[in-house]
Amino acid sequence: MTTLRGIVLAGGKGTRLGELTRVTNKHLLPVGPLPMVYYPLRKLIGAGIRDILLVSGTEHMGDFVELLGSGREHGCQLTYRVQDEAKGIAQALGLASLFAHGCRSAVILGDNIFYDPLRPLLEEADQHPDWAWVALKQVPDPGRYGVAELRGNQVVGIEEKPEKPKSDYAVAGIYIYPPDVFEVIKTLKPSARGELEITDVNRHYLLQGRLGYTMLSGYWTDAGTLESLALANRLVLEQPPRF
Image (tube, rainbow, N blue to C red; front, side, top):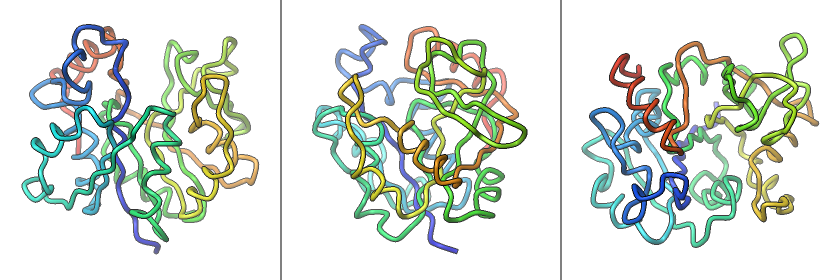
């Protein structure tokens, strides 16, 4: 089995959080008893992944290093990459090309808070190591996210923040990619937002018949707005995540 490396994407300006992120990165804000970034990190470590890359912007990288250090206290080995400007999730992932060269990658967006442990998802993805694998969650507001259209037990379409979603299954910010994902990223063109979209990466694998999914059974939310940050805090305090 190809080596699996972990990647936490913790960039972005966090502008939707207003005054809370004027002087800090949103992934350093508290969720329950811990800084937000601890949750994706502990999910990866709990699944047995020890080599982990954290990608963030220029302004607060030093804060992440001061908080997390080498990763030794967390039982992992941390590497850091700076994203000079926010040009999309896929662009941030592309910065991991040397770190994950020849390896599969387990990627978690730093503001994703979810209950399920990561290991069962990895075990399903391991059945198809040359596929991309995503996590899906039924949500009341799918237009905020990438949306997967299902037919039977297959993904047949993916759209980014559609005005008229074809399903209520959001693509959560949890992805497993084969080693060729970095070649895929090189072929992408910026979207209307001027970003390299992770949905375009997933669509590439979908068109090749190499996209699988796991449905999350427990709660999942991002924490990028005031409302979703408050929800994440409530969920974590009521039912701590499983790592």
